[in-house]
Image (tube, rainbow, N blue to C red; front, side):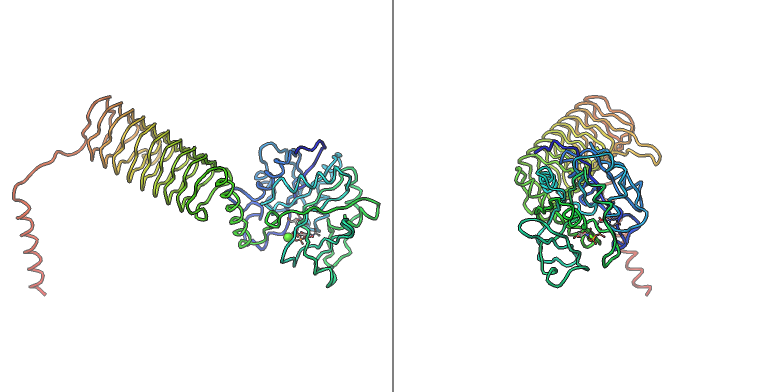
Length: 455
Ligand code: UD1
Ligand code: CA
């Protein structure tokens, strides 16, 4: 659905963060690896809105930066005193006064919101309402403004503190998200007063104000889950759980298999293709793409990485930023891969660190191989050709290149380039001393006996 009307989104993020007990603004706390405010912005962008007025309090620069999601033009406005939600919206008066068909107000601390309710609110404006409130039904209405409805029209929103006992029994609540007729917004907003129990300028008063001027006011319903707000870190954890459940469910319906989905943690931008299998206890950081048919075995930590079709990872593997696994390649248990290309069908099976490297197709990296990429100051690159064989427990001291079809004997420390098809040995030659083990064992037994006698 696209709506052919101009729209300004006003996002309120100047609120009280004290219950977060944090040095950081509430809306900067991450959900799925991305600041809360950016989730709200992504929902706004998904509704086709481009212009955003962001009302900020503390940490204004960082909040504005975090809110600058692709495709949005974000203009920050400072609310220096917290005098209520109506006052907060008016902090963006200069932007509202430019004249839009629709004004959409959303909170920066309600990160599970999606475009559905926002589009529904705008659709109701297009049908002639002056105020559209997004409401939700809840079993625990305490603390929320109640939606008072008569004959299908919203007649008022009553804040908990101002409500009668009868009004408090209402379970349809104000999410705080609201759409306002943009042509009347400045006039309506400037009529809000502060004679109420909290002495604040309530945005919710717009309902009664618009009605007193003959306007239509309606409420649209949305799922409670999407409107979950965050006030403290326990609520933040609930929001994270809800977000993870929702995204895992979407991925499974799109063809991704998860054996124990509740143990898989996704980032906001995790991409997983059809027929990929994600085993239990896998954590995805930002920037991961898993192609179709790849298998991620149990207990992997994957961040900034790409895993191609038919590749397998883990169990117990760590892929760090820049890890790029080609088709059919394999990274096994207790391996770490950073900023490295693993070629088609190449194998890095056990207890290995590959960093700043290119590994050619079909190459086998033996157990315990280490690319020594760092000299304590600078990082260097290791290049290994196709179909090479690196023996177990080798150290490849970068910068170094190993040619196609070359072999490195196990236990080698490789410090100079190995040509194609060559064998490199970089270790002490083995010596055999016949009978010597017996002599050493007898000497050790004698030492032990002498100690015991001396006591
Ligand atoms: C508000 C609504 C209430 C609704 C509830 C939903 C009003 C008067 N009440 O109440 O009906 O059920 O949200 O959560 O609107 N903010 C500012 N500047 C301010 C005050 C608030 O930016 O001066 C921002 C906050 O960051 C927050 C949002 O506005 O994101 C709501 O503020 P809050 O104080 O939490 O409002 P409630 O009292 O919960
Ligand atoms: Ca609140």
